[in-house]
Amino acid sequence: MTEHVADPSHPRYNSLLMRHKLEVAASKGMLANSAMIAHGRGEAYDYLLGEQTIPSAFIATKEIAARLLNADNPIISLNGNAIALAGEGFLKIAALLNCPIEINIFYRTPERMNALLSHLNGLNEKLGLNVTILGGKPDAKITGLEGPRSNCHKNGIFDSDVILVPLEDGDRCEALVNMGKDVLVIDLNPLSRSAKMASVTVVDELSRVVSNLLEIIPSSPVISDWDNDECLQSALTRIVETISKPTK
Amino acid sequence: MTEHVADPSHPRYNSLLMRHKLEVAASKGMLANSAMIAHGRGEAYDYLLGEQTIPSAFIATKEIAARLLNADNPIISLNGNAIALAGEGFLKIAALLNCPIEINIFYRTPERMNALLSHLNGLNEKLGLNVTILGGKPDAKITGLEGPRSNCHKNGIFDSDVILVPLEDGDRCEALVNMGKDVLVIDLNPLSRSAKMASVTVVDELSRVVSNLLEIIPSSPVISDWDNDECLQSALTRIVETISKPTK
Image (cartoon, helix red, strand yellow):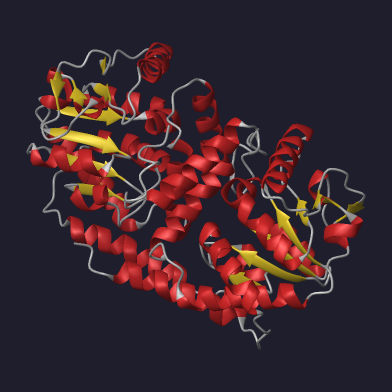
């Protein structure tokens, strides 16, 4: 059991809460073995970013909100960690955008897929929302990928023009970009292949981005002239600042 | 199951092998819930260090070998991850140094302790070694700590003058330093409290350090005039260099 998770005054409350959510999800069979390790990598980068939304990440969050609002066929593609950490928030975002969610996992097994569908459908009902949740019956392929990880829905990811893919794998991110989609990524590692491949990258912790999106979307932000390299550079500069502080 | 773990030509073979070792250990009940997350954090720092032993880390490894060889009562304190990742290697090091190993875990339960003791005793036998393995019957307390995490052996950690504690928690590292011990740490995060508190910090991946120690110890290195801040700064400089490379 994670320590102190019930005490919001604990300085690491949010971090412990996220770990607790992953442990619960793991016990429900929602996560791949690599999920906790991926989360730990994220924690390290978040620490280097100061565990806060840096200004360039907030601006990137506005940009993804604007692009999702402006899309013809927007979609939110979620994996196990994203559903475990912020499933409720993503359902609320999908409801605001009136767009579907598609569950799209890297290590696909029927058991994991069912656990994720059941969890998300349960939340959908609990929140009184009516978000379309895809992923269970894929009938198309992401071009350029092989095996189960290429599976997707024709009326979901395949036909989308703008896709929000938090925590995406580099290969799949690249394949989605090559399909001509506007690919919006949330990734704490500004050096990752997904971060570099994406049209817009929010270098920030998932649950903070979700809170920010829920705040920003109702204000109807507009699309800007976006320079994603500049956005990534700003995150790298922030990490260098953290590291360059005196060590004692 | 981790992918491709059997193929040493895979560019991420060592990283996948380490993950596989942790998965096996987890299935045997040897690890706390936080073990995989901690490993993920380490992976992120290792990536930033270039996934190799940087020159200052090799020099630090020589320094810890020298201090262990020069000690009156050296000891190696191992937690679940260290045993999972490099249990065999640490037994060989203990045999070379003729020193005991003490299992000392942060989230102590009788089940985890027994799983770790049984694993390490099995390896000891398999390797034909006769290393003393402590941890099962603590009869002393690490001064300044409370609860089960303070437990230690009088003829082990308590009476040691030089202690190798790979992957140590910051609080316990500080307590050991305050007891007047020479504390030798292996930690991939040069900004961690353990890294900063230690007498000597090797900023390197555990299995690489173990290989290096097995190579260095027989050459009987001698103790130097050690500046640990300089050692940490060198790792930070390396991370800044990684980050400062062009992002595309």
